[in-house]
Amino acid sequence: MNTMLRKSVLGIAGLAVAGGLAAGPLNHHETAPVTGLSEAAVTQADKPDTAKLIPHGVQGAQSKIDLNDEQTANAKAIIAATKKAGLPERAAVVSIATSLQESKLENLGHLGDANDHDSLGLFQQRPSSGWGTPEQITDPEYSTLAFLKGLKQVDGWQDMPLTEAAQTVQVSAYPDAYAQWEQQAADIVAHNWNS
Image 1 (cartoon, rainbow, N blue to C red):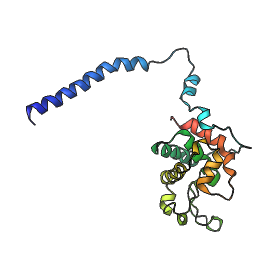
Image 2: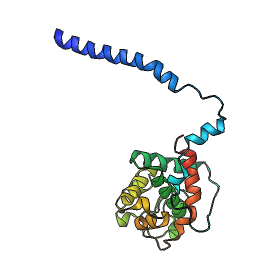
Image 3: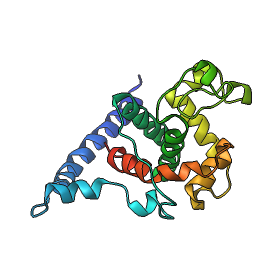
Image 4: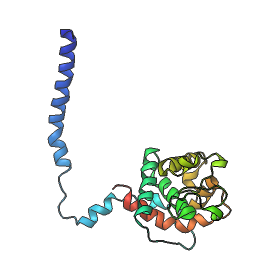
């Protein structure tokens, strides 16, 4: 390495270290604990805003199920895929509500005679409809990203009621059924978005 290039690299490295040292104490003061606030108040501040999660309020009677460890892991996988896609919390609410309706957040394989055609996975997507291979559709990240790709193609999905946005992607025989899961989906996202 020639001398001039080495001095440039060392000079940039020195600036980076000096800048980091200078910024260190400032960051320390910014992250110092705030006194006088309860732990609940600090935790509440970390949760997404309800207005972002349910901008239209819930529609109709709400359903709720207790989630087991697998269902909770699937909900967290949907949230992680939503973040990977660069979409906001509301997209995770729509996705989780859709999965609650379609599969109760269970990654379903082929159900034999009980199967709805060739529907599989968290969103009951169909290989014959172009959603992907059976292996892809039963991968929680892949199936969520496929659902979100469809959601992003819906003009104005952010401003639609949840059931309308979900139905536009899913084309279900029961288009209003997604609405019943909005509160539970929002609660799941609020609890897990920042964890």
